[in-house]
Length: 176
Image (cartoon, rainbow, N blue to C red; front, top):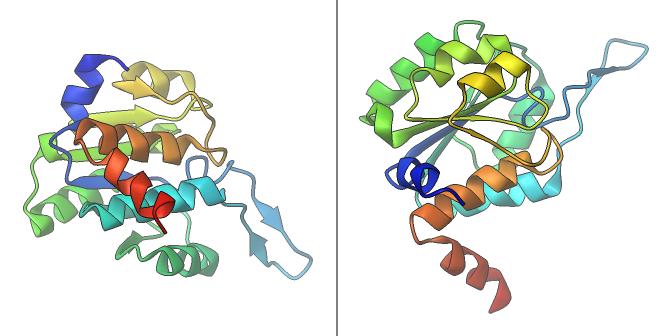
């Protein structure tokens, strides 16, 4: 990995993710009666658990609001879930103040234009591989995998590697 990106990831204590297009592939699956379904990748889920167990704060900020996101994040032990938030910059700023973390200690992962204001507040701005061109251009780093297809796991492992915590996080599973 590029040393500059590892250097930006080293101080991170708060990692914030968009949902649709980052934790999912961005597809909205609607049922006959208005039910909404989303597909989450299990590799991404374990990456989030590994980050949480390593002591990092994790948040999601989504412009959309759906019970399935709240359920999935609760199952993963994610404490900071903000849905129905079109002004992601304000939300991330308030969360940073609440957790007493600086810009350099914050990472944001996004895929679309609505994520750009929050990305600008983070010391490490990440775009998933299938993000819109302008989002990829503004990012410090672009994942190899697409949103909903392992991109979140890449981000989690990047941060853990930069902080010297990846081997221990993996060993936890190998030794059990």
